[in-house]
Amino acid sequence: ARMAQFIPPTIQDNPDGWGPRSVPEKFKDMPFQPFSKGDRLGKVSDWSGNTYQDHRYKNKYNSQFGYGNQYSYYHDEDESSFRLVDNTKVRATLIWNTYQRSRFRFNQLRQRQMQQRQQREAGGNASNQKPFTKLEKRKERERQRMQRNMQKQYGQSRFRWKERQMQNQQKRRDASVTVAETWEVLEEMDFNRLSKLKLPDIADPVDLYKCGELLSYDRTYDRVSVKAEKPLKRFNKEFHKVTTTDDPIIRKLAKSSGNVFATDTILATLMCCTRSQYSWDIIAQRVGKNKLFFDKRDDSNFDLLTVSETANEPPQDEGMNTPHNLAMEATYINHNFSQQVLKQGDKHKFEQSNPFSFFFHCAGDNGNIASVGYRYRKWSLGNNIELVSRTEHDAVLSSSSGELSYINVKALNEWDYRCCNGVEWRRKLDSQRGSVLATELKNNSSKLAKWTMCALLAGSEYLKMGYVSRYNIQDSSKHVLIGTQQFIPKEFASQINLSVANAWGILRCIIDLCMKQKEGKYLILKDPNKPVIRLYLLPEGTFSSDEEDEDDNSSEEESTDED
Image (tube, rainbow, N blue to C red; front, side, top):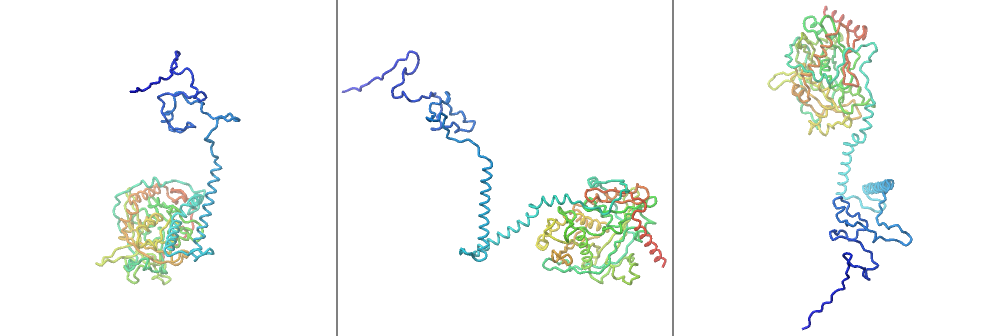
């Protein structure tokens, strides 16, 4: 047998170290890169050396001998190394121009689509496009409806919010009375301090005098709804808004009982002053040793009802919906609504007749007085302060058992639901009455608080509220009744977050500030642009025309009493 042949390789002996002494002929002109057996293998072709950007793997595949230039490419004419990657930054103007071109193309495409949609809605176009099918028409109507809703919901508040905010900031309200330079500021009360006052545990009032005639409420108006609306009628009735010192009953009571005198509207304005935004003023007269009278000025707008006073965007002095025009409209609506919902002829009489009827005896028109019942009441506020006030009831409500309850009748009015972030009553009142009421509580917080306080002062068992809307948004002369609602004053006060203890505390604080002043005439003024109330000392002879009128009225009353 033939054995395997072994040919030993040629070994070069290197006495100076390890490795061959010369380079083999076939590797003579090839570059050599030193390496280590511990080096890891990464990418096969990593020309840039920036493949691994993560700092955790940055040196993982690097050789311990570093990178050499054995494999660099050199051009015959250009000795600089060739780079495959361009690291120069793209200019921002180039990106912006690209964005503008894309936006312009998108707008062009959108405009072409809208034109095609309009042409298809019209029944086709010159290029013989087919009109919409029933399904496509339904989808298009739904798309347009959603677009209109989005414009209503976000169009005014989102895109015009900044503009309106700037206008509201620049617009400053005027004071209810021009403050003269000779008027001295005695006290300044900010709403933050007033809102922290409390006077709990006020005893029940004592009735001193009752007079007037009341009509019964017609329960058929409880069934009025949006689908069964009723037009608001006009009644030619007289409403007496007599101030405190002109009231003959208060003048008689001032001789025997009480030392602080006011009407229910004046008290409600003072007790709920922290909710007011518009300016108002009340005259305080210190008479004798310890008597105080709160009055309103004859030429003031004190008895007008405000509209959207506490809204985020209150009415502006532009167009037909100015604050004064809306106040006149709301007062007109309340007067007519309070008489329309009553049964004519069914009267409930108090012990005494209307104290202001002598104005109509001479004219022979005594039956033209509106339904109203006056109750003069006295409260003890402590520290020898006895408050006497004239309160009002608007009607009586008879139950199935025949019991009579005194009620106050008021009306909320809708003028333009697109303004003041309102809610469309005709769509929401029957199904979402709570949403409508919540919006009104936000926009008319001051007015609702004063109505509730007047009902509490008078001791009314119920507060009837009507919802009256314009027949046409652009016409402020025609209105329709689309709903009614009934509240218990105490429960409604807690619902609107009206603290009765805080209201009495504010009134007691104002009375104490006025009582410690010397005898004279003072003015309580709400600042038109700040949540502040100021007490001014009026010089002698201010509002003298009012005093002359009061003297004339008192002389007429004395002559009628003698007759």
